[in-house]
Length: 201
Ligand SMILES: Nc1nc2c(ncn2[C@@H]2O[C@H](COP(=O)(O)OP(=O)(O)OP(=O)(O)O)[C@@H](O)[C@H]2O)c(=O)[nH]1
Ligand SMILES: [Mg+2]
Image (spheres, rainbow, N blue to C red):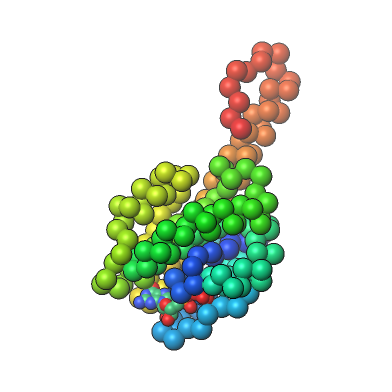
């Protein structure tokens, strides 16, 4: 892969058992294990990809979702460029935990401007017949809590997994572009005599 690659850190958060490790392993190794073990602490894998002409090395951090491992995972939130809030569509409790995961991330990652931080919400295990969370209510949660992109995935049958990680990259690039646009806007204002009324940041 030619051209300078942008290193991005993406972190998967969500209740134990929703499929965070399975999503990472499906995306990086294209494997799925129906008997996956609970993650203890954190693990990470890298994968190179190209999104809209940009070469990216995605460093995917997979975290333990079980409450007892909280102190092992929270030190690794800092420096993340994107957070994938993950639940399972057959586990209503994991959907209702999304708000807590978002708060935990913002606190331990010390996010200065949560309103502009790239979160993406994933509803996993859509291959399973018995759903407890509808697409509409998940979309409504995403709209109410920050207008986050919402994708439905299955690590088991590889539905939307690559799309989900590509969307994470797009969200980071979009925020970066917005910041660059703002910086550029301020620079031009510094030299022009007329005070521009609008400020975009
Ligand atoms: N049917 C189905 N099962 C899945 C899917 N993704 C994961 N699983 C299964 O769900 C169980 C938990 O998956 P994990 O990937 O270990 O879940 P996790 O979120 O990493 O769990 P913790 O490490 O405890 O936080 C495993 O038995 C997986 O095989 C999916 O998309 N569909
Ligand atoms: Mg895991």
